Length: 195
Ligand SMILES: [Zn+2]
Image (cartoon, rainbow, N blue to C red; front, side, top):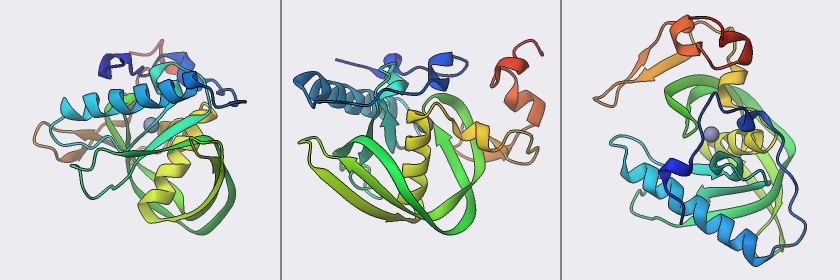
């Protein structure tokens, strides 16, 4: 079974690739979902101040369009997830709002990212049945973040060049602003040569 060590982080360039669509939901897909859930919970158990809210398959280096999202964001003890296969956003609604976002594949860095406050999502559930979800608030943000992953996009890409948008997670669990150059060293291929 997967562990937190299977989670890949930047600058691994697999995170920049588009994941493949799932054709049939085979036992391999079911197993992939289980591994994603186990890896997320293992990561969460190793972190003091954070919750493993969601994960895309690419984050355990399986480039398929599969995401798992925590059943209940407000109750850490609820360790169930909802799995979505080939999820896509069919409509962006609401205003754009800035809020903090983190990622299991971007270590200790948080960003203030502008997202739509409401989205409509179409996907298959684990049984292959089409589901349509209207999400608002933090769930809408989570969908946008995870579906970005299936397209090789990370939250840091939305705040590239924004000197005020990067934050560091301190040991006491507080988010503190971090120097832009320090925060972004190595995040994008052209930054790798920089110090
Ligand atoms: Zn992420």
